[in-house]
Image (cartoon, rainbow over all chains, first blue to last red):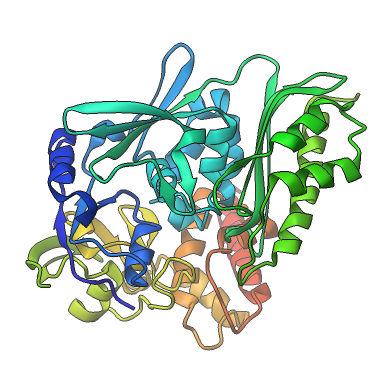
Length: 289
Length: 166
């Protein structure tokens, strides 16, 4: 199918983009990498009277660090994030996740801001950013605000972003000493949509994992912080987490959906499998226990 | 609803092109309809199948998930350009020799992706080839022959480089 008609504008500055967004509001769509938006247009799942192309805003494409934070401009592309030494050093979870996102041709174009704003329940980066405790900068003409990743995703393809706002920056806290990340995903093909995935970040010692954030995706409406599962893991010895207890906690935490690729029941099974894999990553990265 | 058409100019396979088009026209449709370069195939129109893969400024991209207005001023190479320049010749020969195509619908995309892989990684293992091409669907071959063909080209190119130093 083909997209419905729209007007196209490519602002030269963020101020201009925000003014266009203020003027067109709910009738506008922000075009970043376009790897989700254009397919939605083509399939007529979505339409907009005005498309605001932010690819000309070089201010939104940098990856920079301050003392505690790595800041990614909204149009940082997957390929650039994957190649970034700052990300490799301070937010390796993103590097673990990116090879699972789409074809390399998709990763050449797709952006972090686009993935976050689209809020596809199967997307990798929203879950990673929740696990890392990232914050998003949302700008509108004349003002901006920060919002925690965990508060941003409000539903399936729904976010806290208002119709007159543009997501401009993602701030990721640098990984602290002793902390490590783990990632797992099960899909029909390497680069396909997740049937279930998990992003985790925590502090492993010889005895246990503490300060754990474990966020599932591709299984529920939004990225889900698995609160009960985390408390089971944190309350157990690292090598001795009871499978039955985990499965019970996961079924409290998660409300899996059915789709063409996978039943809810199978998704739930994968959640258990992935939890075990993530625990194994923590153990092996921490050396022999 | 009507929208204003706009003039875009870009380089396609080394030739400057200027056309007046609707903003909603995808790059794939632009190449096929406006320039009659029908080697860029349109399968899913949602970035899933990879049949429309082209190269923009040295990187592969899906022509169905790009608007033609977005590539203003860019350099686009399609399967036609990459074939005429000869850069794909050994890959094309290897696909032919190994029966790595049947209907040929996916082949332009497979070749564009394989060419990019081999410029980034001159000795990919079979798993790396498989993963690099995993965003490209083939409904005929079962992929095995495609992986074989790319692997053969990688080995032949490396042997040729080796000879230069002998």
